[in-house]
Image 1: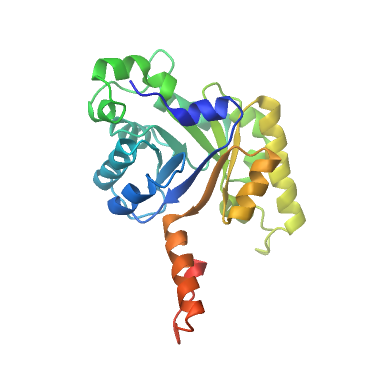
Image 2: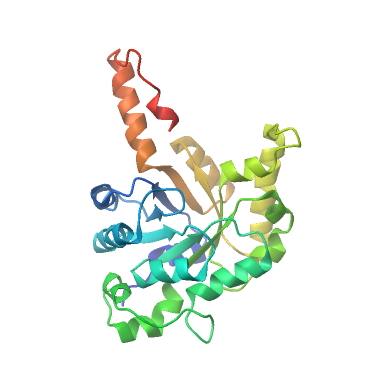
Length: 265
């Protein structure tokens, strides 16, 4: 049975870098899985992708030798079970704000006696090049469990929430986190306040020995975050890569009269 190299990287204190797949496109997944990223995450929370297309995408990623992860729509047992049973090497669980929510997410990922994941299916075994029996015996050691820290309350209670055994990484969603830091008038947090929140997350993650991750939006930012000690690092998305590349061509050739700014998406 294949092992999960991203779990090994994180446990050894090394960074694991990937990108987000938000378009629900199998062909894009096939190409990016050969680009050299450590992992790719199929975003099922904020995209149009359904479970059938997700299954084909994660199969394509796994067959190419990359690690397929799935961000589920919500922290629900059925969402987590379904993407793991269809071959995901791990899940990214959004908006985990309490210790109970963290425990529920971990439990849904693991087979008994360590969790409550139900036994069934065989598609998962294909992606791990295993028999179903081998998969059932070894999956608990290979599934990557990433919980998202996206609310300022979770930052304030970080150690209580994310110290649950079985958590492999905590991943910051910068936009949602900043949204929860708005004041009563809707004014966003100051750059200094947001920077401090990220510093608090990283320091707390180091104290409890859980790798911290964050979504970045440029090569320079990714390098800076890795240098600071962030490990599970996302850079852009396939949509962002496409939009930025198109904008570069359009701007360089003086095109786009009357068009929109694709790079903002």
